[in-house]
Amino acid sequence: MTIARAFRRPGAVRTGLVFGAVLAVYVVATGLRNTVYNNHVLLADAFLHGRVWIPSQPPGIDAILYRGHWYIIEGPLPAVLMLPLVAIMGTAAPQTFVAAICGAVAVAAAYVTFGRMGLGETQRLWLTAFLAFGTVLFWSTAFSAVWMFAHVVGVMFAMLAVAEWYGRRRPALLGFLISCAALTRFPMVLAALPLGAALAAQTPRDLRRLEQFVLGAAPLFILYAGYNYARWHTLGDIGYTLWYHQDQVGEPTGSPFRLRYLPFNLYSFFFLPPQFLDGFPWLKPTSYGVALTFTSPALALAFLADARQRESLLWWSATLLTALPSLLYYVNGFEQFGMRHSLDFTPFLLPLVARGLQRYPTVFAYALIALSIAASSYGVWYSWAYHGFSVVPR
View (spheres, rainbow, N blue to C red):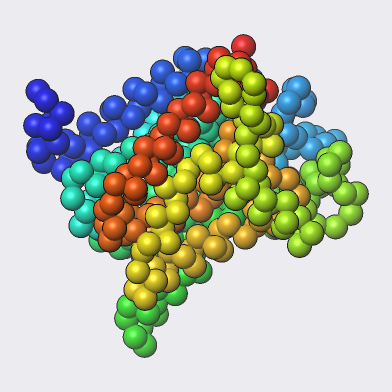
């Protein structure tokens, strides 16, 4: 069966083909190797033993010693996803394999989204390939250490929410999916503001949809508050602040989110170039990352979407709000290809990219997607070939 014939089949079959193809590439890209930065595996193991703390701090694991115990600071949802495999395999459970599945689910959800937006099959496939292999999602899935794994899981839940928005738009399910994304990558919680407002605006003088949205999100946030109380004896999460106070590049007091970090983060997102070498392979990604301008230039197609549409206002609001914490954070991500923090807002920017391509389907637009795929593929190849980052397994 040819690819063209396969994609003339019913939608569920086509979506399954997308999922299977992307999963196969992602699994190969992992090198069938696990990561030693398995914070979420360790946390899942702790949960299975009735604890919220890990017994010690293995090398390279982000954990804080607080009142006599070591606590993982990252959001707990990825650890929940690891529970079945950890229950069977213990701390040897393959975090990278679960990441590959989550990444493929995210891409399949994007393919469904583009169909629900009314894009033609050719545009759907190009945009799906862009998310899968032209954004930092590709590299983060291939080397799904603790931070990258969290990004991949966050993108999955956010893309499922975007797909639901263009589908039945069930408020409770949207709230639940956004809460799942937020308890993986907390900046994503800010997308709830424009989504909730848009839901309420659909039914004038009737806030029931907004109430359902909040009720869908509430159970997980209540559990999260309990989790924080079990760790810190407060309902809020102070983990990243404590980490900032102990980090050698942080400060002993204050918040890790400060206006003075904005210039470097803006430079990182838009201007930070790779290093140029005199010989092969000519380009070397820096340990600080590489700006999106060079790794995912097709994101710029979002600026071609019609800004006068409510749809554009919704997704630009969600994009800017979820990007704000990363722009004010004290580090840009470190040890990364591209800018991994961009995955916090990429799912919300993607509908705008789609509208931009739909509005101006030029050769230049497709060239930007092809260039993005080439750049991200280079990042995965370079990382394996030269072990250019500490997260690359040896």
